[in-house]
Length: 149
Image (tube, rainbow, N blue to C red; front, side, top):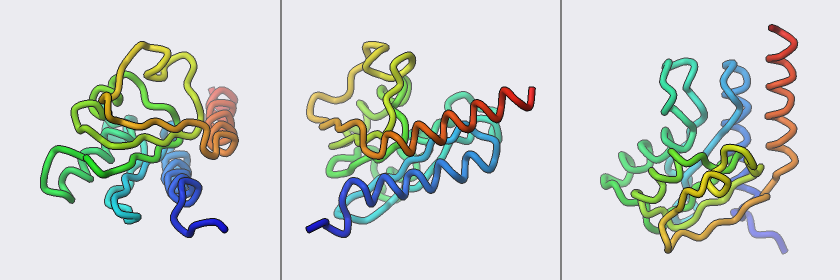
């Protein structure tokens, strides 16, 4: 029996955000933050729109979730993000003390693991959830981008 609100369900919501980013010409990465099976933040990359290299989906989601909760710590929260967080986002996730990070596609060049960045010691990490869907969208974006230039 599949639970109605499992990792796949919430990763699909993060992928919806990634598709919004794709349509805006942003690198298609989406994120949602969940607590008690409820989405409290939705975000996608906004680096081009905001002209801000720090406007990653995870950073937008962390800020939104903290505002929703009225505090800076995201204990008892889970981040679902379509691509493994970079070291900048890992640092923010570390300081937020988020309980769990679930990501889709691995980023072997710029992901936090490859860069040697650490998450909070109590943060649980699960990778590879809907990895294929996330990877296909990213590849499609960069192929399209190369063909336009």
